[in-house]
Length: 438
Image (cartoon, rainbow, N blue to C red; front, side, top):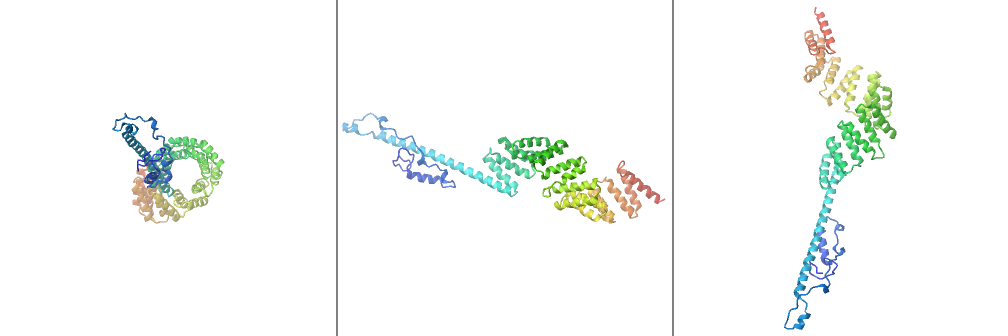
């Protein structure tokens, strides 16, 4: 065999001589590809060796001046042809091998590039940079379109951005490639839950239960689905199943408490709320609900305040905690504290007309009529037909001794609230002012 690189003869069982092999190998190893990924040609057994001379067809003998010598002389043209043919064939083999090496290099490079995309994506994901992670995961997805883990991770990013429609789409794609993937089943259920699609969410939780040895999260989620569907019997059943697995689990105890609260069994509700550990992330909700039990049902403002205050200690911006403290402090005639918490709630919902009106009432009780008027007028700017603001402005003018203005506002209440609860109160005020002027 002749080497197509240096034209030297070497073993019939190799396609390139060992010296040239080293140069060729180095040429294809010039990038970042590990040398182990290159196939060494010297390790490949080549079976297309030169045929035995006895099988070679010779050309007819040519008559030379010395005929006897000519008979013994080999056909030089045939030998030259064989040499050229062999060289071309060998070169083709080497080219094929080179193409194979190049393709192998590309494959390794693409795999490495895709690993880089995934590594970058996971790094962004761990740092909660979900937008950046999505970009990298999509690049990886283009390279490996049949990898269910990439679709699952991509879905997780959308999930944590509260983009549940997009999350659901990629969880479904992951499941089309791997129907047994627990994480995709469970979080597809969660995505449907947050879209208020409780019935379909339950379908995925049931499938997820079949793929795990620890169905606690699925039972807990199913309990919440049934609770939101107002189907309290299965809600209690699945919440209890979750509690049986983990008695200190905060979420199913909260669901059980809510079920009994809805049924107005306040003692049982309180029992389950008190089972929730203080380490539970939503413990502040349990404290808030306990506050509601004492405020609305047990009529114990002191204990209600205690629970509401503890609730906002754990979650300082909790809207409903501040909202209720504004009400209960009004009831205990601690108007400045009532204003403090009502205004905290208003920071989160500046157009809550009920809170705006309540803040005006607190200032009215403190005899700060100008400030009270400011809030009542703000309420009317939101709803020009809000009867409570008209009635309360009438009270301010009456307190200031401006009976004419007071009558104007009381009459406005009757005009816009002909069948409302304030109708009788406004009529009484009008009669009272009328009698005083007689």
